[in-house]
Amino acid sequence: MAGTESDSSSSQIFDIPVEGHIEIPESVKKMSLSLSNAGAREWFWRRRETVRPWSEFLSSKNFSKPKSVATGTKRVVVNIEHFQSNYIFVFVGLLIYCLITSPLLLIALAGLFGAFYFVSIKNAGQNLKVAGYELTLFQQYVAIGGCSLPIFFLIGAGSAFFWVIGASFVAIILHAILYESRTDSLDAEAEILMEEVSVN
Image 1 (cartoon, rainbow, N blue to C red):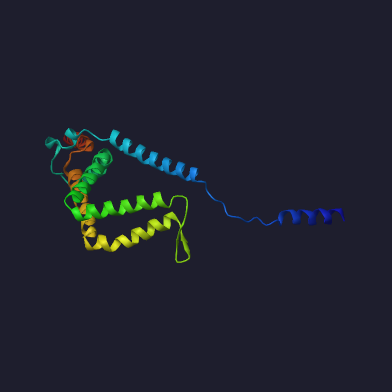
Image 2: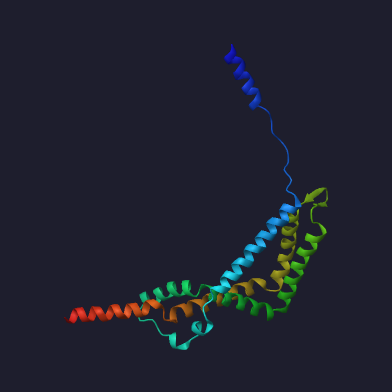
């Protein structure tokens, strides 16, 4: 009997419904945003610190045609790892060049980020009501981005984006293939040793 009463009481304890809506304070949201910005800055400075000297990156005496496909493949793997930060700055440089030479694209991007900033300032901490529906700040960003897609399509943003991707890929791969990596000297020493062994 006592066991039955304890079981019923325990079931009553665990059957208590837990409902509600958890609201994240604005201070926490701002702190998470500042942490993400700090992470981006840390990543940028880390990339900047690991940039190899540009005199080494562009030294013409280190460029040569690979002796075989295997050598070229090794060069690509080693050089992409060695010059990773340099290649990122090459991509950023081509992106900036594309924006400078495309005034309409630059104006459209400025308008897009200006709209994002305006919405974040005006509707910070509150939802926007449109036709009886409440839009969160993230949904407002998505709506602005969706409305801007036709404008970017009309000014040729897609072709500019693929040009940057293609130009970066070609430049990086050509540099990685033609630049003599550290494995070239090791391969040359191995070939000399193999020749000496075969002669002996």
